[in-house]
Every structure is written in structure tokens, then in C-alpha cells.
Length: 471
Image 1 (cartoon, rainbow, N blue to C red):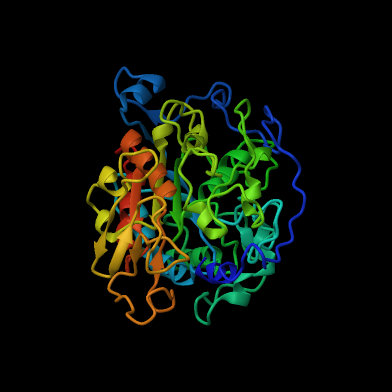
Image 2: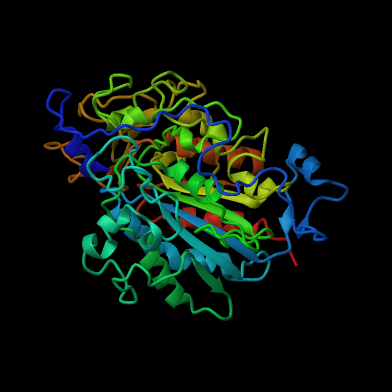
């Protein structure tokens, strides 16, 4: 998003030319909106079937949830959703993910105990558009790529910036063609049958979305759109574009790759049934005076969480520890600990060492407003996870959460992202990972600034494998 930042920051309220269109008034829809067969707590296995899941002796699914006792599945299947930020600062980060995928695949499938031999792998972008306003880099204002699996094939926004038109030479494997219909909605891998190197190349063809996506990213809501608003279940008669991706007995993994904060804006067309909603899509209108900053980008960083200037959906929408029938865990009725969430995101290097527990309170703070989040200095320069922490040296941004490992801060152009790659604080993504870590032992967090992300991906693979019953 750093390119978008430089574009938007050249605007002022007096001189901005942003075409805003009327957005239909949306309030609590009481269950309306374009939801398609939304998973709820009453979703069950087919008649006569029993879930292929093992619980501790004498435990029921509800008891296991209450006691935090982990369940496991006898299946060696996993359904993996990669949420890939495709804004203008993400090209190198996507290339880093591509280089690490072979190691990740081996960590998932090699060996015996817990090995996963049957994979569904899907990719979505973080582009959900800017409903009601036209913003540079946001090609489809209404829905963006809408959480549709394989946006290269199915997305509306990415049609304006296909990766073969924006990717540097050599980034896409020779196997990739310039046809949006080259690959199906999601990829499949079977150990002993699929060729690992060919699968790696196919993954890169799908996951290297390149740049050009909306610079006002909605990472969490994109995953929610893919898994909850759409119906990705493998059930007879399901005609949703994402149908067939999620299998009842499989472990579900969701992995975010982003260098920014999540700005999942309340769009009441997608409100949960029966949950009141106050629409916030005017946050995309640069002329609106109702938000925390005149800079569109800073509106995702400078609000106090929970205040009237906060445009985002509550974190409970994505994981509610008191109600696993909501959010991502709703995909696994009665066994929410079969959902594993990981992220390479904007967090300090010192709080995301692979294999070590995350010191959540030290990093995010203990106050709900985030005002006591971490502020410090890494070897690469000043870093921060504090909410609303403007960079005193760079008036158009908050202090970065991390800077590229091993780099040196420029003394002549310290605010130019071209002189030092960095990431902004991804507090909301980290909060979701934290809940999965503390509630189910299923959260993995790594810094997008790390030169080699394979340690984080390996930890994610091990959490997935831990949910497979030992033979």
C-alpha cells in the first residue's frame, strides 16, 4: 500500500478529486443481505454419519470446547486458505512466500505421525473494494474480489491488473500462462500422486497475485467473505463459487500474508443475522468529516478502538471465544479447535521468533484502546505496535511495526519506503491470531519483515499436523 499512500497523501480536502457515489443506506439488516447458506451452529454431518473426530475419553464436543481439551481428526486432509495482500507494497513479500512454499509443503506431508496427505489449497486477495467511493488502486469499488477463491479466475477487481501485466520478469514460473482460467477455483494435492515441484509452481501461479490491489486492505473480512458469507462446504447441491473447498472432516487452516493493518469496514449488507449494524462505508469518502483523519490511509490507524471513529467490524465477528458458532470456527460445528490460523504480518521481529511463545501483552498492550502497545527500537530502526502512534519523523504515517530484517534506516530519506522496506502495525490480525493461540493453541504469528518466513510457515504446518490423530 505504500504506493497508494504516496498517491493519497498528495491530496487535501480542498483539492481532492474523488468521485463518490451514493451507497444504499444500510442499517441492521436483521438477517438480510447476500449471505449464501451461512454456516450456523445447527449445521451437522449428513444423516446417519458421525464426525470423524476423536475427543478425550468421556468428553462431548461441548465439554471439549469448555475445557479447552483438543480434539483431533482421523482424516489426513487439510483445507488451506491463503489470504494474500496484493496492494502495491507486497511484491517482494509475495515472492518470499513463493520461495518458502516447498519447505512448507514438505513440513505438512513428510513423515508419518500427523502427516497430511490430501490438501485443498485456495487463495484470495484482500481487495473488497471501497463501497460508495472511488479510490485509486481500488478497481472494483463495490465488492473488489469479494473473497472469491482464485481471484485471477473469479475476481472482479484483479481483472484490471492481472499479475502477468504487473509482475517483474521471472517472478511467475514458466508453467503460468496468461489465461485467467488456467487453474480451477482451488488446487488439490495428494501425497504419492501429485508432483511436489509441479504443485509448488501451480501454487505460485495462483498465490503470486502481484500488485495493483486496493490499498485499503480488508484482510479479515476477505477471509470471512470466503468462508462464511460464501458457502465453501463440500455438500451436494452447493452451487456457490467457493463450493467444495471446505470438507467436514478436514483440518481448516487460514493464513494471512500482509504488511498492513486490517481495515475490515462495516458494510451492513454483510451484517450477521440478528446482530445490529451501523454502516461505516463512508470511511472511504475522503470528503467525509466523520473519521479520525483527513488521510484515507490513516483512518485505519488513528481511531480509538470501539469509538465512533472506529469503522471496523468487532474482532468477535471472526472469533468469539464464548460462541464458536460465529466466525471462522463456525465452519467446524462442535469441534472449533480444528481451525488453525496463522499470519505473516506487521509485527516486530523481536515478538515473532519461530518456536517461541508470543508475549502478547507486551506487544499489544493490555488496554482496550491499544495505547500501551509496544514502542521500542529494533536493530533496523524505531518500531511500534501502539495504536494511534504517529511517526514524528514522517508526518504522513504511523511508526512502522517492523523494518526489513538486516536493513539500515536511511539518514537522508528516512520516510521513503524505497530506501527501507517496512510494515505497518497489523494489530487486528494479531488479535485474531492471539485468540486462536490462547483459546485453542492454534495460532501462529510471524513478522512479514523477516527475511526468511519458512520458520513461521513450519510452525503453522506443525499446528495443522497436531490436529491429526496419531496412527
